[in-house]
Each structure stands twice: as structure tokens, then as C-alpha cells.
Image (cartoon, rainbow, N blue to C red; front, side, top):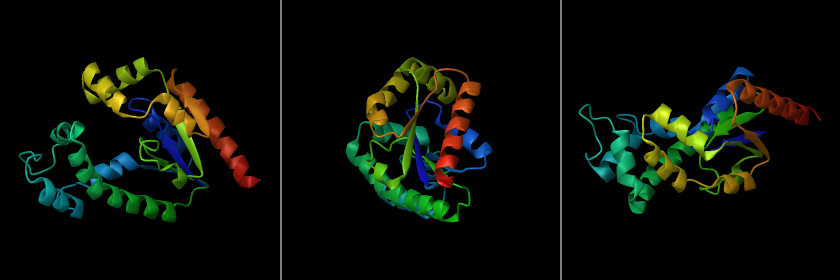
Amino acid sequence: MIIGLTGGIGSGKSAAGNFFTELGISVLDADNEAKKALDINTPGYLDFISKFGNQCLNDDKEIDRLKLRDLIFNNPSKKTDLEKIVHPIVRNSITSFINNSSSPYTIIMVPLIFETKSQSNYDKIITIDCDVELQVERASTRDMQNKEQILLIIDKQATREERISISDDIILNNSSLAHLKEQVLNLHLKYMELLNE
């Protein structure tokens, strides 16, 4: 069983993913794979340089993620160019991860399942949901960005309602990490029962 784990910025996807990992479940963070796709001297990096030039590089010749975010944020064609480089690499990583997973079910953490219309790739979808105020507070603390920047990112992502519309299971993460952990355990037990039917 392949499960897509989604949620907006600051919703608590990574924390939920960590709790599933603690339960012995294989969890892949697609965002991390997307970052690794542009690591220095990888095929993705070289492809990026050939299309974007040196404008997003730092002094160490690594891709400066903030410069890149600024470049693509309001430039749909540049965003599409970047996706054409990164998405095939991430897809291959996900396929390989699933094929090599030995846990009872496998979780792929993907923030943009609704936006990329990729829900058919998963047997089930879990959405980690929380109030927007909490998203802003968590994400601005974690990413060292101001609240206006986080709100701009939230505006570009699917709405809570859109995400919930494609979800099989919803975890409301408006409380403590302990409460999140408890909900993850309950879902895990539910999935294990399903698999044993």
C-alpha cells in the first residue's frame, strides 16, 4: 500500500513522517529528493546550469535556494523549466524507494499532491491539517522568514478544503506533538488492520 502524506507549509508533515518512521514504516520526503536533485555536480545540477546559467549560484558554486525561490516565485515559465529538470529525478527516486521498501506500507511525503493532480499515484492520502495562524507561526519560526512571506507561500498552495477533498484520512494538528503522535499511531493501527484483512 502506497500512501501519500500531504499538508501545507508548517502543518506538521515532517513531524508526522518522523512518527511513522518510529513505527517502522518507510517514509520518503519528496521535498528532500527535490533538493538533492540539484546537489552540486549531479546531472540535475548540470542541467540546471545549462538552462539557468550562474544567476542562482552562491560563492561555492552551489545553488542558492533563496535566490532560486525568488526567481521562480513570480515567474511561471522559469518554474516550469525547473520542474522539467527536478520532477523526473524525483519520480525515479520515489519509484526506486517504493521498490526497495520492506515495510508493511510505504509513505511518500509530498506537499503538492492536489496541485500536481497526482492523487492517483497513491492508494490512500493523508492530509496533515491545521489552522492557518499555526502554519504561519510554525513556518516563520522554522524557516526564519517573516509572516508575509509565509502567507504568500500559503496563497500559492492548495487551500485546506482542496487538500481535504482528495484525502482518505485527515490528521488535525492544532495541538501538541504528543497529540499528533497519538493520531499517527491510531492511523498506523488502522492501516495494519486493513492489510491483515
